[in-house]
Image (cartoon, rainbow, N blue to C red; front, side, top):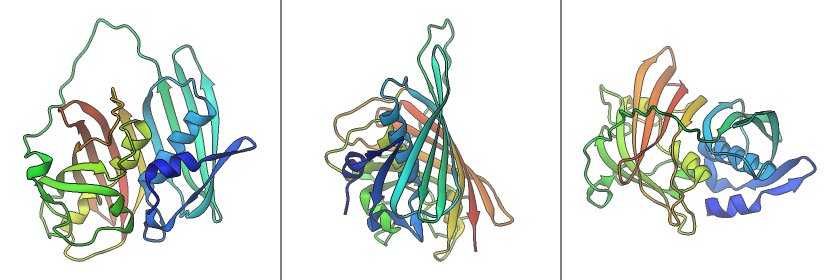
Length: 262
């Protein structure tokens, strides 16, 4: 397998863009795992503009499939006093695969602070069972560790599509920065798959995220995640995702729109 850190290190400049080759072990069906393409877009933005402030929000649209050699084309849309708006297009042999809009913003002094995102009470990762129940996950899932901390299991025929789980990269050389978090955050199957009783094809169409204070740990840390579908109908699902650090600090809130083909 090609570790995530190795892929990041292989991103090479090409004129006003960057090239990298995605290996087959990062596949999800006929395309590359969406969390990886999103993370590569974030990494390319950082390479194009190394002085960026922290990433605060991102929108990814998964337009088409991609695998093998891909090109990442970052573009600064606007740079203000404290914010930078960028776009990144990831293209493969079949054309545009992922379009990203990224918002970077420096912290500002403020008299106001409020937070109401407590993590659920769950067992420690070492006390939690395998998320997939010992069965196989998608090809790309071999790059991650999954522990079921509550909620339902994939393909369990559940009435309530909700996961609670611990996640971390298997890449021992990887820290806990922003690209690593983005690559990790899409790792569970969509919550709607808790309602399935057998495997079936799905495809994420859009992914929006807000990011908070991200610690840059030296080793790949455990992250706690809840993923809950709010509506599953007409072949589509909408879901909310929240990620906390192992210490219970909120790191990300995200939303996805997913196509379901069963």
